[in-house]
Image (tube, rainbow, N blue to C red; front, side, top):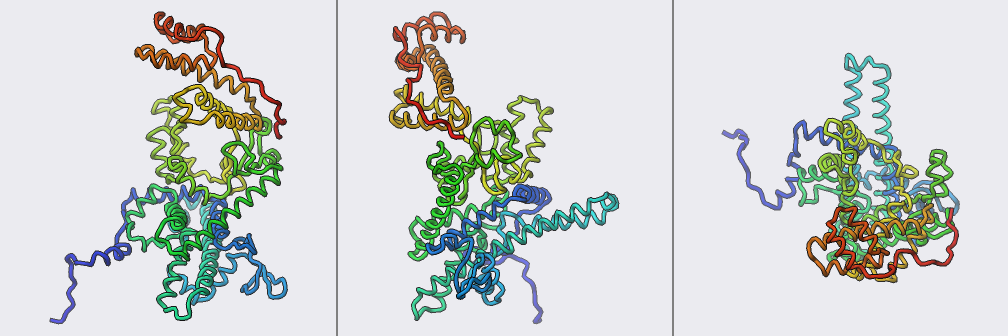
Amino acid sequence: SGAVELWHGGAAIDPEVYKATRQVFEEPFGGKIVRMAEMFNAFAKKAALSFSLFHHWALTESAQGALARLWNPLRGMVLVERGLRGGIPLGFGVRVTTPHREGLRLMENADFIRDVTMHGVNIDPVPDVMVGHVRRALAEAEVKVRRHPVLGKIPGLEFLVRSARRFNAGWDTLLWERYYTGLKAMTYYELVKEQMSGMPDDATPADIRGVKEKVAMLVNDMFGGQEWEGHFWLTPKGRQVMHWMILAPDWTLSNLRVAAKTILPGTDLKTRKLLARYWRNMLLSFFGFIATAGFALTRKWPWENEPEHKMDIDITPIMVRLPWTSEADKKNGRRWYIRPGKQFREVTRYLSSPVDIIGPKMSPLMHIFVEQITGHQAGQWGWEMPWVRDELRWYQDIGTRIVSIMEKFQPFAFRGNNFAFTFPMSRGMSWYKAQKAYEDIIRAQVDPSLFKRLMPGRDAERLREEIDDAARLNGLEPDDLYKQANTKVRTQYYGEMYRALEGQKMGEVERIAEILSELGATRATVRSSGERRGVPPEQIREAELRMPAGAPSRGRRRPRAARRPARR
């Protein structure tokens, strides 16, 4: 009849084509519960990062890696050169401006925008921050409040919601539409220009397109903002689930890709050279910053800091002068440290402590799920939640559980472990950490089964000296801590000895008796420990007989040479 008839059945499609079409046509999970969960995640992330310069600093790190040059080590932050399209003129054709402003001037050209987008540079905000979710929700809330017969009459409520919407829109505009977009545009322009200068004269359009696509992919890896439609291994539903579970999947994947491409086989030589320079620039920039800032504040190089803070900046001279630092914190002697350089540190943590990084990588929703079910902080299984520590009944801990959920909305910038709205901050050696370190050192020195496995004697002595210095720096008395640690280790071995006796493991009893002698134990202290534990008298007598007769060979620290006074 010539009429068009629609086909309502299935259709066969090439498997390779299906991989691409699925990225466009597959519907994500829906339903009210899914929308509520996604909205919770979106607002928790947004609230946590509000007022924080975390993203600004992370983008600056990437710009330094991509744009810094030996003739301008700070080129990722400031441009001083000829040929710029804007900025402040200095004479002789030289201008000064910032990379993101120069990138925004490039984006004023329609041909450049077309080139950027066609070759794969993603200039939309990274999906991790869920900009669209929050913007739509705030706009809808403003309309509902205005039209609601009751809420609309509450004084100041409409103004409050409107102010929140405007603040959020302004923040996103400055961060994502200007700083993020400008830096990516400038980096793409610079890297393409550099790569094109080395192209042969007979390069084909396909060759040029291939170079630009590789550069675009690198820029997405450096700054985040993956072109997810091109990652066929992850479907829209898969991306949705990943965002439910991971705090920042886009940033995490980008960081892993930019690191893996540097070292794994399969990367072409030009790309490998670009990435080698990227990491060189980043390491030099931030080790230089850390060393300079640390020496300026304390007249000491960062690698002279206490253990676990060798490449951190000691900001104690600043913290003790801030009016909001409590007098107790000022007087207790503990140091404060900040840790710049999130991107390159994170890569090393994936290899050195992958378990420790699981907690910080969880989304707010996953944090709540893990904490409410297990009673432990996500990624920190030794730290119990308040309702577990206080041994509350289910009806008593409801309020505490709700508070822990609401804390997910507290901005990082206003938490106690943040400095200058940007850097994670931590304290120096605590009483607990020092004592645990001494306990490990003592066990390594006296237990033959652990000695070689944990550390050689010279390393144990060197580490003990470092812990001594760290304890003094933080207002602690190392000799007292060492004695307490020795007592605790000795108490643990008392328990092991009596358990071995109960199991008739006489070889183990002999071994532990030698260890206890090294720790300063005597027959009298062994007897006293057994009596407190309620051990049968015959076992106590057997334990006493296993102990060497005479004075203990250990138990007090040998005298040491005088040390320099603690730095204040």
